[in-house]
Picture 1: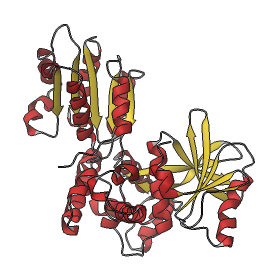
Picture 2 (picture 1 turned 45 degrees about the vertical axis):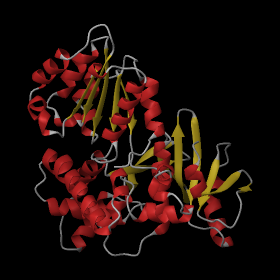
Picture 3 (picture 1 turned 90 degrees about the horizontal axis):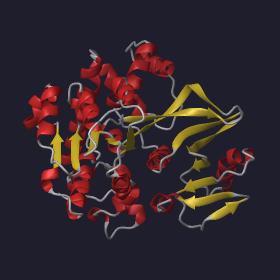
Length: 403
């Protein structure tokens, strides 16, 4: 099976290697976390680390079921295999399957000759007790499915134009293993299996949800509505109109569950005048567009919002917190924040029509500050343009930029 390099994620692990801090990689199921650890392990061995100084346990493997159910046995197993007088590298993959794993990680952290790497497939394992117990003692890398740049670097994408690669990228899936599936039926089966695992293991089983059908209906509604402002009340009213009554508070519970499972991401609104987050209304984007195709209601694809979804995820990959910019009259698609950096992004399929160009520029022109402003489109016929400080760029070129 083809293994695709994930340079940004690998550099993160290399940068933190041997530093006395726990390395955490979180991400959607099947987004490539295990492969990332394997690539990093290969790098360690190539740099002279002895195999006996490495322990790699994947807790989706039944071989470790007994250890996963008893944290004391797991801890004893790990320390019994530690090598003296050298750094030991411990990889605990899919750690959320281990009962009371935070106690194991905390105890290992006390040892100066242990370098710890853990992965998890939902946001739960970094909340509550773990966050309290390990506060200030871990760094996290949020791994997403393949970026457009990573997709273009794969063998599957070689010899094709950027436009062809983009169409395949948004119409199939960005989960790494799907690059090995050339038949539509195989792709559908793989996505359906992955989706079912996320729903049943990461949501239903954990929260004890009895109405799985309603949960999936809410998920399907959100996937159909990416890029639109959504409220729990709006979803509840839609379900009720379909004769499937649900309380807005239950919808809120489902929304939190879907985002905690990392299937969906929530982009809250940000009041650009008041400089504060707004609690009501938000936009949702899916971690992999393949799930949207899987659960599509049969509507014509909304190519503009699909492009928005791609840009939103790429901004997350580049380390930004992403908000929807709320103006008194109007909206900026994305306000991207990182440390002291801030940038504004407007996304449109095309602005070759003069009226469309004016409409897309207007919200950016209202923000009279000196932060960078971008208009990203799929237009290929025109070069990058600058409209009084607003830089228009081809979105595909921007996606390939390593900035």
